[in-house]
Length: 191
Image: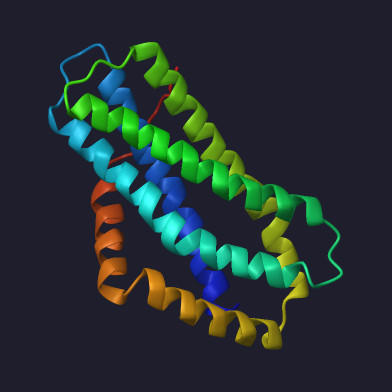
């Protein structure tokens, strides 16, 4: 398995863990009992990860791979087009979520119902996106991309990486992921 592809699979696993941790934090925030004051800070940390890492590294790399995959005689082009559109929607939805939570952090009033609906929509969008890629696109990557394709993608990815993420920045996000996902996953889904 190619190292870039392996990293994408690992990213998806980490994103799923982070979404579970995010959901747990939301359950704590919306819960009826006493709230830990650090919950909002942790939610903002999770949103930072969910906005910066995918938008600056993961999705641009996927888009390179998808472009290469579209040059092949694949059977499910619609899934790729859908995933590419979802990348834009996820970025916009994440910005909206950040705006809502930063407003709360700055003592602005955000209606609870609006916040919960936005959170539910966001979680559903993220999970559906990864499910689409994992089930429909990643198997095509395995089937249709060969060594020559990965050499081409690696070259393109190296150019992108210089623009977006150096090793130190990536380590920061890996540490952030680890600290946010240390505790157990939520037992209940957001209502």
